[in-house]
Length: 148
Image (cartoon, rainbow, N blue to C red; front, side):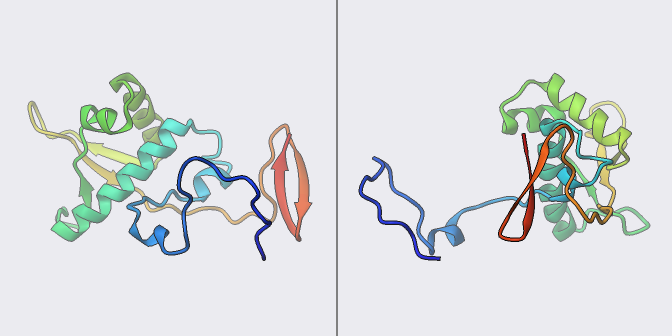
């Protein structure tokens, strides 16, 4: 698609095709939004799970596994709260939600030791149509979108 002519320009630089490769990013699983088991979770829980997934890759590379080969993550709530720039209470609530939805399981390691966090593999349910609770579905270029 050809870009529309820009007669006005913002006062900040815009991304170019080559810029995306130089940005550190995390991938947030789309199924956290589309699967009805997880779609109504708070954004805090979804972002926390994304950070845990990112940390999972590091743990896997470092060989942090139990005797069954299951990878565990060390990510204290205080540290995650600092990264997310939220209070520990919000991170604790996000962890509780993730545990209730069977997305994480924590092995308590005792006084002074960080918990080992195990992640469940995401097994999204396949949907024919996107979820649109309370909204309307609209089409654009043969794709369905939710709106209000």
